[in-house]
Length: 168
View 1 (cartoon, one colour):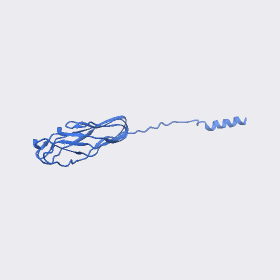
View 2 (cartoon, one colour):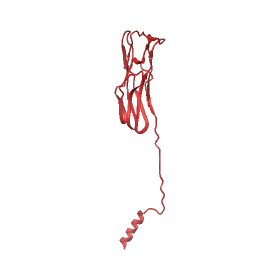
View 3 (cartoon, rainbow, N blue to C red):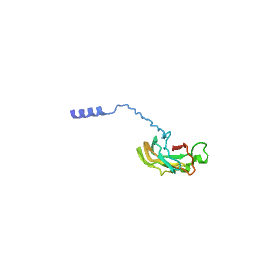
View 4 (cartoon, helix red, strand yellow):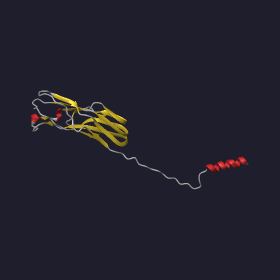
């Protein structure tokens, strides 16, 4: 009888209260943004007249993806304007068809597949870098090289053009 009383005591001690109420708890994780950051300027140096090309690195370009997606993707592209000096006459212009972009290899953080683009002439948008099969936040950084072919008859001067990087 004593054993039965002890057994009933244990059941009573571990039983739920006669009245209970559950609370469902929720919270939200919101996604951030997809951004690209490129150098504000780059100087490829100088060459003497009659040189056929100039080449050099532009500096680090970084895509930051804080959207926190499951199976996310993004593609970064590059395009160039013409390079001009003086009054931008024909002898003072290097057309953007003479500008070649090479993304090179890059580094990344996060989970996914990160691939440098094939590069090429950037008179139209060219793939610079891609992120695919992305899970959560990630970054990719690369240091592209520009190779500019200087046409015959180009005059001396400081040539300026713009390379625009975009991501989407």
